[in-house]
Image (cartoon, rainbow, N blue to C red; front, side, top):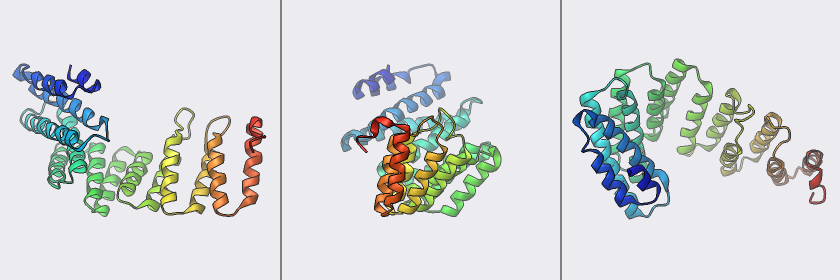
Length: 272
């Protein structure tokens, strides 16, 4: 009921039903705390443009839910849910730090992740969350060590570069972030049919744009057009690449791209 209420924008009713859930039998206390936290967390992030008062209310309720979950996790530690609970708590405290700027949440996240790694030192995702936390704390070298440990455990190079790149982007290191994220696409299966997603292409291009690194952006777009898996490259890729070459005053390449585009899409001839 709480999930339905929040989905319909009925926050008061959602909070009410969330509290009612805790009237369940005591042996369900941990599961209740987990799923109520999950529902409130999802509702809090549903609208990033919430008014400040609404955001503060959701944050307060989320903090209460997290405290209950942390309490039951440390007391009961059920076999199936306890590791998932630790990692989820880390994400909650990370989110609360982002919206509030309060360093206490980073401290709580660090404590939770330390306990998670003590309980299960072979769990790659815990190291990734720890790496992200270290970058947030400005301790980049330690963050990279945690990401490297996750890669050592699961050998997932795409995730290594993706998480590292996201952390670099979040800390304003745009040039390094673009290169890391670009590499994550190449070493993973992003360019396989069905996985290709233009939204990630635009995000990486934006990182180049922020530094006005148009030569690197042009190389990136050329790479994407060459590697993309569809029968015909998306015309927006040609339009974006042409715009970059115009900035670089490479009109010859703009002309070549226009001809390539028309070969794929003859209906664009009049517009070109």
